[in-house]
Amino acid sequence: MSQQPVVIIGSGLAGYTVAREFRKLDTETSVVILSGDHGGFYSKPMLSNAYAQKKSADSLLMKDAAKMAAEIKVEVRPSSEVTAIDPLLKQLTVNGETQHYSKLVLALGADPIRLPLQGNGADAVLSVNDLDDYRRFRAAAEGKSDIVILGAGLIGCEFANDLAGAGYKVHVIDLAPQLLGRLLPPESAAFIQRKLEGEGVVFHLGTTTQKVERTGDKFSLTLANGGSITADVVLSAVGLKPRTALAASAGIKTNRGIVVNGLLQTNFEDIYALGDCAEVEGRVLPYVMPIMHAARALAPILAGKQTPVHYPAMPVAVKTPACPTVVSPPEPGAQGDWRVEGSVDGIKATFHHKDGQLLGFALMGAAVSEKAALTQQLPSLS
Image (cartoon, rainbow, N blue to C red):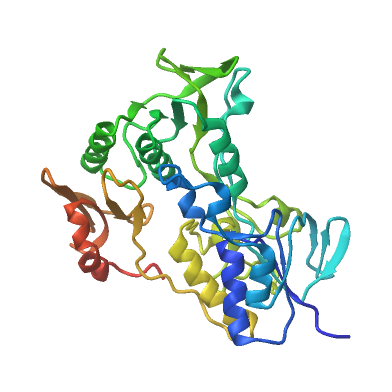
């Protein structure tokens, strides 16, 4: 019996990068990529800053599934719904049929978090997590003027800047008292807020949306602080939740994400996970660079060479042209404090341990020029 293929569930950046890197090391073993959608490749980070550039969903698609399959020399199966994993028999149920594997890679991604909203318009609240979502959002916003964004985190701020730049009146609502609450000290948050307000964005902080009512083509949002906002489109950008249900139903250990060790291995030796769905030694890192590093480590592991993933310091660029921003937040629970230096041109915030070691930074405006020098001073994550 010939060797069973390496099967990758997911055709996003994580899945395709693993396949590409693996093919460089092994040109013989069959690779099957199971995609829940069209299977085409595109840059997901571009979804939050494509509107002002007048980019359609079709124009964001770089290569379709057939081109990706030919280029990497793998089999790509679009519209493949995986409903079960049997780790003992090493097989999957895909569209009701059985698929065997030698090694399985879970690159399942994450789902948008849905707020528990009341009102007859709650189900019409949109989110943008993939190309099809973006297509629906563009269609809903076409010819409209007022957009409300739920969430003032990284994606919410990027969309706010992009949509304001496209001429929309944008309101942003968040329970936190500041923008980018998990990434910035208050002084930095105030700086970027002023810049985005200069673009016309209106913020409603320290409150939540309780009810979304729809009347005709309009939405009326009732806030916990007693305020109300009328909008044409409501976009939720409150965060992502790793897709873990499929793994959990198969007895694969999950926590915040699918739990894997430094070899990206689950509690089953031939099942691995990476990307937005994975929790790597306690960390969930839903950014491009961690995904790339994980994929480059996993490829040789699949080819038989144990290669623990190593994460260097990986600053994240926030795509807010009104306020160029680069952040490298300290690890959750890190002991230390922020030191902030500001001017009219920019703001530099550095997070230091009590012994003086640099553990993180947030740079804005002119201060982004210090990114390279500060990154060299940061410790690696592993």
